[in-house]
Length: 118
Image 1 (tube, rainbow, N blue to C red):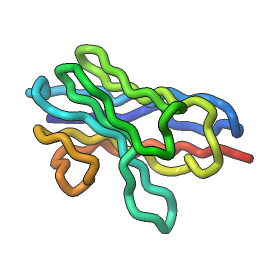
Image 2: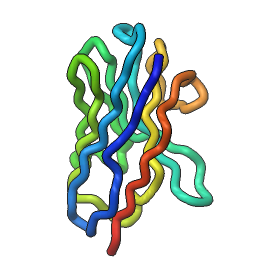
Image 3: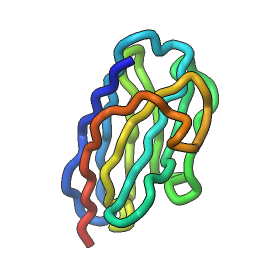
Image 4: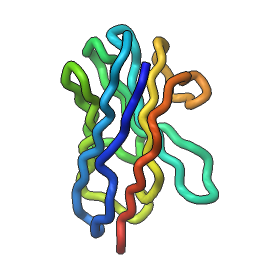
């Protein structure tokens, strides 16, 4: 499984960004998740969805603002009403278990920087 994340950038408070995670390999039964890590902080869960479809899961801090979705090859994270505290490096990850714990994920894309200015 290979993951390629993209779409980060600089945006003002209240703005929007869409992150993409292109996936290849035998991923049909996997869960794909987004995590983020701000400077000096631990990596934290943002959102997750099963590649095959079904329920989606969000951290409380992003519920109502972020939406995870997918096509047959790509998982997206639509981020609306961004806040300065959303500033972080965002990573996509995949594993054949559903979890909000980063340690359970064995496949990671490179990070993409999201910066929200106040």
